[in-house]
Image (tube, rainbow, N blue to C red; front, side, top):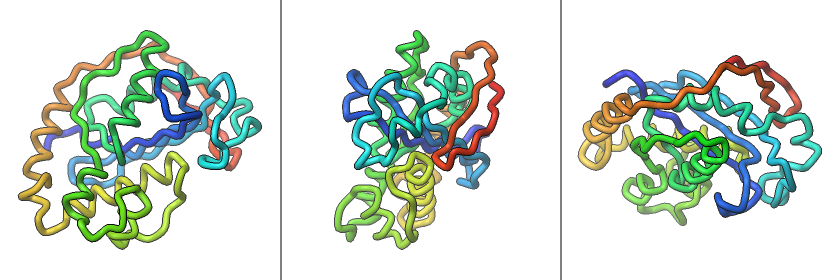
Length: 213
């Protein structure tokens, strides 16, 4: 497989509209071309306003106090995503939120190949009771996960990707044979670079780690 790999992403947001609402948490799981985990990242994000549906994502205003703004994380996120196929469960939604957040700081997000685990599940898990992330994970027998947390959902989507890769019809229906071309396309896409920054990533447990981008 070409170098680069996959970036499995999930965002939690203050609402459903990328134009009217903001990202409040982001999670990324980086996989190599053989779907082995290379790196994980997650951070709460200060949306500079109300956090939105706490009953869904369980993030409160107090949780985001002291969290970085998106523009502080942007250089690091660009480095994580560069050269990779963007993956997510209903990935077009996650991309739309990321694209809009980058647009707010005048950075265009390149048109990289997308891979949607919801679409893959419709093909490989016809017995699922639904095609939300929890139903797909259950149908694949992947065990429990921390739903509606950005990193928990990204890890679950990564698990679904691996399941569909290994499922018997994978090579014939969107498996490694087809994905190799997407990996090559992603590796060839030029990505913007922002100046170096120092930011603090704030996790839900309150732990801090310094990022250097």
